[in-house]
Length: 350
Ligand SMILES: [Mn+2]
Image 1 (tube, protein in one colour):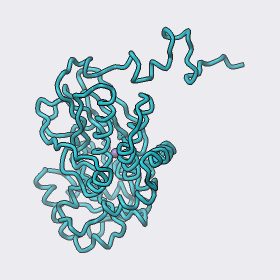
Image 2 (image 1 turned 90 degrees about the horizontal axis):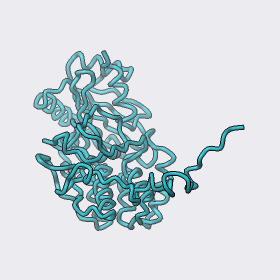
Image 3 (image 1 turned 90 degrees about the vertical axis):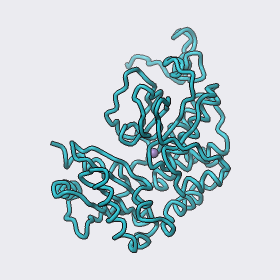
Image 4 (image 1 turned 135 degrees about the vertical axis):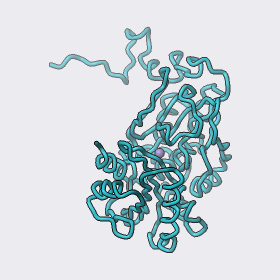
């Protein structure tokens, strides 16, 4: 016979002075307020990564809202750059004010959401000023001087992790916040098609859609349309819309992604985009710049590349193909995080 294990769903009066749930509940007297631990009294910004996407912006808003509901009025949402078309459509739809733009974090206390790498964080951020991190990416080598609250879960979007935190804290989710967190999951998982999507993401969207009062798949298509509207964008805007920097064993890289309903929409701008990629490589002293042109309907990506000969060799090794016209076309490729960054890391590993 197996010994009887303690069931976490059944609080045991004999443990921890009466309430086992208190150990995991943020609402309890055991709640660790990082601001208090770090002796902070000033404003704390919740901010996502640079080139902010919908998950980064809405996670900042929803997490600041949760902190406010828990009594931490000094917490405010911010965006580390201009808000994209998809996010604007979403915030307008649910009548949520745009967060303030934060591009210089000098002397600012911050909670990082949706990223944990300094290369992707707001400029002039001091490691000592990071109060918390809530994320769903690989752990990127960031080192803090003090212990902080760091929650990272391998799920489809930061929005789903934050929705969970509302539940754990017994804080009711408003229609607006539900709409934002649902949309973050739909956007990051490309309507559940991305390999980053987990069963938890589907359950979260189902629950949040009910509160938001929208049909999630119909609303998700509206988001995709807003995101993939390239007609008014310049090549530079297309490149920078969702762009992240990485260091692959010393190979300084930038990897962007643009999602469209049809790759033909981008064909007229391809030469101008490659030109911008080359300019960016020179200006930022990068070894390579990659841009995923992702066709969300065909679930494939045309991987555009510019870079040094050594970087090209690594790129070809990573994706098992030969560069032709500055690109390699990959079927069943939607996720930068799971299908592009890991093979690049592997190819350049020394
Ligand atoms: Mn995300």
